[in-house]
Image (cartoon, rainbow, N blue to C red; front, side):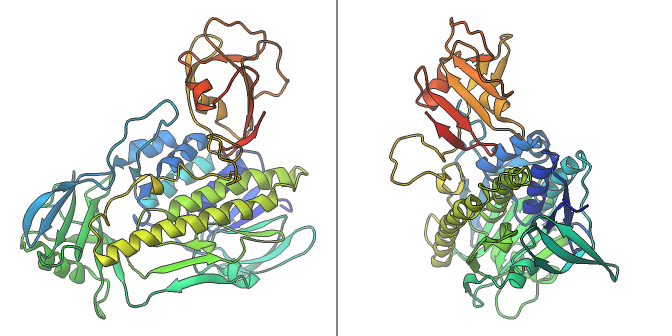
Length: 473
């Protein structure tokens, strides 16, 4: 089809973008040069803001059912048990914040859930299909795809490179990938079984004299595996034998036998940010645009939100309004730069042996990401995340603001309005208990919506399709 948006790369970023387009009935084609779907934990921490994205995309129930809360970690120094700790202290949900805590789920499981949701819209990932080359002009992109040695010429209105840190798309555009790679520090990550360990807990084993050197093992939901993380010393290869040697050395035990190494990788501190996220009709998203240290669980989450930001803007462009496309780079590159700073600072603490190197706070949860004008000091302004709140609908049934926002549309809230509303389907009066209204309304039974939006009678708020405030008057 001539009007299909072409997405190169079917990881979490590409899948989120494809879903955003497909649910708007925007034709999309998503390809990946891999011949099999990724099967490993990699980005296993889903941040609270991403859980809100998954709520909107209709996959939150599946994600919550498949994952687990962040586990308690048991720490051992020199083989001696020294205590338990959490990377995050659990937070109780509030009316404005229904998903306050990170959720643990291996990346391959997250991707499978997104693929299943995408298939509900009739779109499937084309494996074994590589983007060989492309050119662009004023009206679209002409690309050559290869599969099983056969070339296919396709025409697309837009191309998005969600094809990882070694992005073919970024390299073809000649966009600089600014940053550093530290070859002196290598980390071994892998998924293994260790059946003697209680799978309800995480573990950290380290030497008594150097407590920040050692290994971490985090339980993965849906089986008996742990994600294993350890510094890789010398010229050691990423093998099960090497992992076993680390466990033996740092735990001081002989009864922990590792089996079933199903995924392993060597990670180096590669901290980079693309100079640009857009070149006319071609966009970069996810790891193609920014790569992060694993500290803080930021990379996958930032990529998912790239796709979430770009999808509705591409759909609008294909409906004739291209005015939003420039905002993708200005919004998301600024966020990526900030998030890279957070994860790099956490990596520095880990390398330096800082006492709180394993603690995570609100700065990693991405709930404070905003596209606001930084000179505007008001508590809630255009560009901020739109809070949730409990309500009742016209029939008296409990609902939430997030229920009104869910879907591909923008939402308009008219606080205190009792008359007829504009005819758009996602316009609602937000009224106080005991008030009557002639248009479509919801009742702010406990006042949380008025409070969260700092609203008075007559306040009007437009919520963008990606859950950020577009207008306040």
